[in-house]
Image 1 (cartoon, helix red, strand yellow):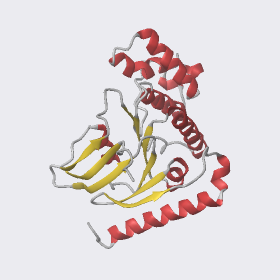
Image 2 (cartoon, one colour):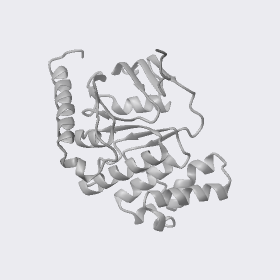
Image 3 (cartoon, helix red, strand yellow):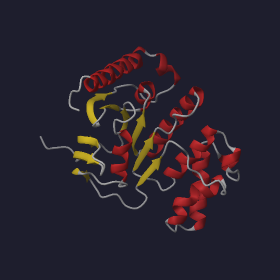
Image 4 (cartoon, one colour):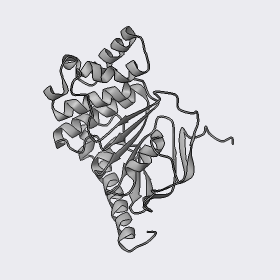
Length: 260
């Protein structure tokens, strides 16, 4: 039997030590398939965001390397941070179009792509609005649209919904999954919330802290499309329990000094 296709990307023994001596990550090995949706779950300080920054090329590992099935081209990686980081002096349309302007995409094509994407994220009526006129959830929708406007192969999301109320957060979870089903990008989503990670992802990567390392890699075999009914499904409750137990165990390893 022949081997399957190589992973979309693979972290191979990645470690990161900062100049002050802090070991942020140690021996991170993780394969991500094309079109997968992965959740990185763990407490603060366990290196989840640092993994995203390595994949995005914002920092270089101290040891190990990242292997790609095809080297990412310009615009192939989109990233959404904890804050929307929108330009306050620019309209939502101009904010979302920024990556296309930087890539020198023709204005007519860029505007058409922005208009279509704003409709997908529910902001069609707010293209001319400014960030100060939008709610927190709407600003995050604009940030997601900006990250997706280049049609990236990979979307990295660093706790984008953490500051939002529960109702808005759940609605954005549903909207994000709809975008993923439509565009079929690969997604890595950092969260503190077990419930959010399990609802969104096909795999949960549970991190242990100081130094950050992978404690468990848990497949989440839950049905798609995911909707409100799943939140009261026994299978969802069981998956949340398994990830919660793994996270508690990861913190227990840290508390007893194992591997630190």
